[in-house]
Image (cartoon, rainbow, N blue to C red; front, side):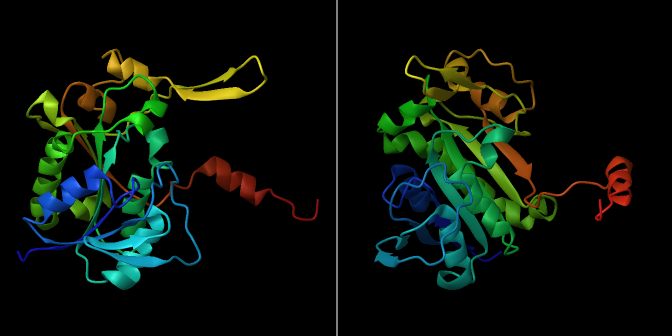
Length: 264
């Protein structure tokens, strides 16, 4: 198989260490073009702009917009022949079903699937006790080595094996490289929800994801087979996912629709 054309994007911004780590590693297995946000766009989900400004960059292109903007601009104009989209490596994990729609990293991968281009979202778990603490971290570039190694492996092999016949995209979460070599586990997004809302003395409400503290302590309620359990156990989690939000027809809703009276 010929070397793939790889569109590399992220949500941490084009100057992030995680994106640079993937760019350097993936250049060994394909032709990498970066189309990434000019600034940090973390947790913007699939927000989309009407038009975006494009700046040439040594790695490719910096977009004044969101991760979804980058995927659309990349596949629609800048790198229309891309064989695969890789989003990451995000500083901080993207684990659990409730996180997927928030993540700019995952959203960039989801956007690619509507172009019928396979995609991989890549994130690195960092053991911190508060989700806000990620903003203060300055990670060593070498910390991304395990995530980069797993991504290189999947980019090089997954396209030719039929993996993307059944999965639209892969959500990959790897531990920091300092934990040592990590096995790869196929997982599903955990359904455990740990968000809390605490009313403060001044009347404000603090929203916090308590799972980070539990993860840092190694005490999580997530079952075997889930993405969060795999990462806490020191494994590279790979969740094969589909993008369209669809479900099966069922009799109860059909019955409601049939008895609806538009004149009532």
